[in-house]
Structures are given as structure tokens and as C-alpha cells.
Length: 424
Ligand SMILES: *Cc1c(COP(=O)(O)O)cnc(C)c1O
Image (cartoon, rainbow, N blue to C red; front, top):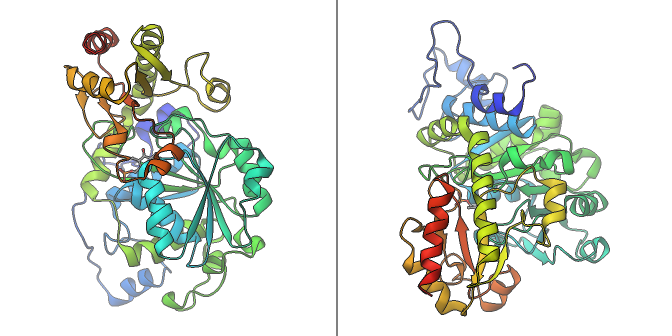
């Protein structure tokens, strides 16, 4: 595809129908694909020819979404996964083995802290969580000889802290390892991680990308600029893979080695592929993503300004407010701030619970980042499995309410929050 504006890529990339083909990308709801000769299939298995043969490895509908995402982020390739969690797992498993180490920003999604801090730790991959406001040298002190990636969230869920890209990119450069960024909340429309030093971007597409709360999914996008051979730290990519008759990914695929290995090794063995139906829905919904991100952001700005002035609100955290400690970084790295914010009503945990139970239009939902406004109390739900210390480390206070502002009329959302606040 020619070089177009991001808004055009959102609508048109990934599926360019030939004469007489369907205008809309079709759903290829098939696990497998038929070939005329054993030799053709053998060439596919040997990666000598490109083509689909089993949906655990690739599928034409999933490929449409993969192409669109790679184009939107400005990467060379991407691989879609069954969820955001599996997308993160792919990135980790593709770079790390037992005995390796990760340095991660501490203020991240609860599911990711569990995955890195507990599940991968049990498999021998250790993570050090750092205070992302610490100085570059303090964070760099956490890097070890066996560190294989630096990780952070561009805009953290749920605490909406903006990552200091420059600092983390410098640390990754000094450590000689890839800088991996979870760009779920801003989407490619509000943040451009590859312009700020990220080498790999992951998303939970279950959030704004789908945006209608109808399909789980995740994706890993590679910029293709990290030199694995030169770094000497990634034998999985630069030495023969015995499980793939001696293939050396960096030799066979050059800058596309990371995604090639993610597919032919991690996806082949762990099988967390996105379902074609979910890829179809996500791809369709992404056609309106730039429009939706504008509206989510402008609605949220109005709600944040309303809450900031409300007498029953103790504190509010939204990067778009001028007195937010995130505001300067938000202006530097984000085009707008999205629909998610947190606030603390006066009266602590009890007041938060009363507020939630008084909402009418706003639903109590675990989800964030879809068309319908919803609210959540993380301390009793999403972050419930973390210890008090871990909760504090991820920035969760007992009274914290997370709001995800939808696409409804802003006046209706504000009226609902106002009547619920009146009841506490
Ligand atoms: C939701 C979320 C995830 C996990 O995604 P799932 O699709 O729910 O598995 C990862 N990172 C961030 C920032 C998220 O918001």
C-alpha cells in the first residue's frame, strides 16, 4: 500500500481486494487449507514458500488484522494472539529463557504484573519492577548481565501514568536489549512508541482497538530495528533452532526474525492464535478507531474537568488536566489522553462502593475502553489477587475508582456521575 495518513490506513490497510473479490475482508473460518501436492505443503513447512496451512500458525483473516496493525504502528510485521495476556507472553517467550531477567516499570496492568512477577518467575524468568519515576541511573542499576528486555506501558492501566519513553529507551540502549512497550490504552492513534525508541509494541486489542467489548485479542508488532546478532544476547534468534531443523532466524529472516520466530516457534508450540472471527470483528471495528479515540478523549476531558471541581471528589488522576503530574509527559508523548481516568471520592473505600452502586447509565464492568461508559473498583476486583504491598506498588489505593468514558453524549455521562456522587 502507498504511504497514506493513519486515518486512511485504519480504514483500508490489510485487505486490498482484487477484481470481483469481496469489498469487506472475508472471514476464513477454517482450521486448514488444501494443497494439490505433498511437495507444495513440504515447501510451506520448510518456510521456502509463503502460504497458510494451519490456522494455529496463520490464517488469511487474522493476517488482514496483522497487516493493518503493522502498518498503523509503523512496524515491519506483527503476530496476532488470542488475548493481550498471550501477546505479552509471546514477547517474553520469544526473548527470554529460564535464567533470564526482565526490568519492568512498576506501574502496569495487574494481569501483566501477575504474568511477569508470578507465572514467569515460576518458569525461571525473573522480573524486577522499578519505580518509573526513579532516575535513569537508578533504574539502570536493576539491569543484570542476564536482562533480556525492558518493559513498560505507554499509558498504564488503570493508573494512567505516562511512560518516560526517553529514559526507558536510553536504559534499553545501555543494556543492549529490546525496549518493549504495551501501547494498549493510547492505540497507534494517540501514541507512536516506535518514534520514541521502542523496538517492539504489544497491544491488548480487547480494549479500544476492538472498542465494542465483543472480541478478545492481542498483537505483537516488531519495528525490525533491533540487531539481535550484534547484541550477542539472544541465542534463540541467532543460533540454530534444533526444533526447526537447524534454522537460524536472523540468517533466514533478517530484520523480520523476531516475528518469524514468534510464529514458527512460540505460536507453533503454545498455540495462542487469535480466532478468525475475532480478527474479523477487530479489523472491522478498527476502521473507526481514529474517530473513536478523538471522542473518547474529548468526552473524558469534560468528565475530568467536572470531577476536578466537584466538592465530593478527593483527588482525580487524568493526564489531560493541566495540574496532573502526568500532563507534561502526556503533551510530549500523547496526541490525546483517551477515555480512562481514576479518582478517589471523599470518604474512602465505603464512599467508592456507594458511588458505584448508585450509578445508572454507567455500568459496573471489569472491562475498559469500549463504547459504553463503565466504572470499576480495582482494589476489590482486578487487583484483588495482589497483596497490599503489590497493590500499592501498582498504584492502587483502597478508594480508587476507575472510569472508562465511552462514546455517549458527555452531558448524559456527567449527569449520571453527578447523581451518584450526590448519594455518597
Ligand atoms: C487488558 C490489558 C492487557 C491484557 O489484555 P487481555 O486482552 O485482557 O488479555 C494487557 N495490557 C493492558 C495495558 C491491558 O489494559
